[in-house]
Image (cartoon, rainbow over the protein chains, first blue to last red):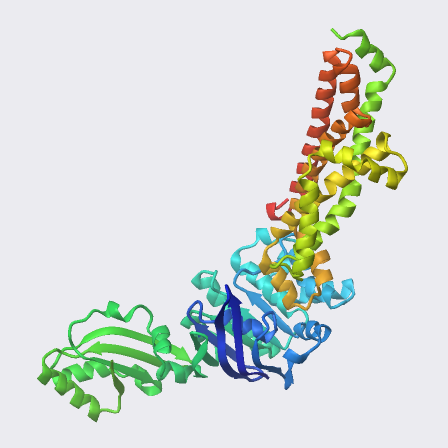
Length: 329
Length: 226
């Protein structure tokens, strides 16, 4: 279990204090895939680096399995880091080492005999589906293959935790999906707890159990992915869930209603029913359906007619119906 | 076509000996300059404020020393360092003393060369190694130096060519080799063919070092798929 308690990080730059993280409180349970989402500059990368102390927090505690690691001696910290794997947006493979020797690297550091390290590295390359490329060099691999090597390398020392810092941001959509499935598989088969840092909602949708939304150095909200998706409370979460600038919807002067579909409702033709029964047209601005925890969830935003009488008709219909809705401001 | 002096020099094996002396001085000085310059360059890199172990005062101090030696023209440095050579090897004349000069002049140059080669190593790769629990020594030996190998090799070639040039200059205060033959037999005894022969041989040696070094650097650079 990873617990962050009142975590804060302040940089000094040009004589001014710059707050990168402010009073972060998170609990990541064993076996979870925990997502941390935010826009660039929100402090995500600093936050994930506080978990293995690549960045030292200036305030608060980082407790891993109950132990405050900010108090560890240098040598203890180096040993702890072997139990926390990490992968990066830029893959960060050793360019002058073959694929096999890249995966052997952390084992060499841990002092494992070469022959054993070789066997273990081959085992891992098989796991990520690259056992036939062990003699290749990183420059000969595609982005997705490089990230697979990086995953194999991160898992070499059998870590309990895996930190992923924008691990799929440099990859195309298909490769992103494949890498995310691999991470999910690793989580399920090896029981590795995974912490995912991203700015893309689709990454969270696809693999995360829980999510924390980071905005301007603070946690805006956190919870199960389905909860945050269905009822985003913070402005930032809404922005991340409804992609694009909301002004792009255009302004026709009508009031906006947001409907959330979940579970059974996801398949009901609610809007059609509403329009037919009220005999009033509405303008659909945004719609999205996702599968989370094996349940379907959907969002739709539509605009009411400018005519007050027509708008009231729709609102009256909505009030009577079991539909989950609210007026957008 | 050739003057009598040239033919005599060749027959007596003086030109051949000159070639050997130049090569020998260059190689030995390069090795010794790297023995000092390589660790110095590593220290300059790791103690930098963006390095893996920032130590501001040490970095500034070493930087100052390196810059001090690098800003003195070699010909002046040689003369100024004669007593130091005497202190170290017991003589202030001949190749032994010249090698001391060459090392003193080249080591700071090598240090800067190494420092800038190591700077080319992607900071992300270093961070990845740190995330695996490497200590600073392991980063130096297993990440910085191997990853910078191609740049280090090219740097070594440039350093050797510079040292070769220095070795020719050392003839003015008693060094031997092709430089000395060019000055005392060619220039001072008015035998331009001897001078040009020394120029040609020096260019040839530089070409060999350059080509061999570049070939080796490319051959071992795994980023190029070699």
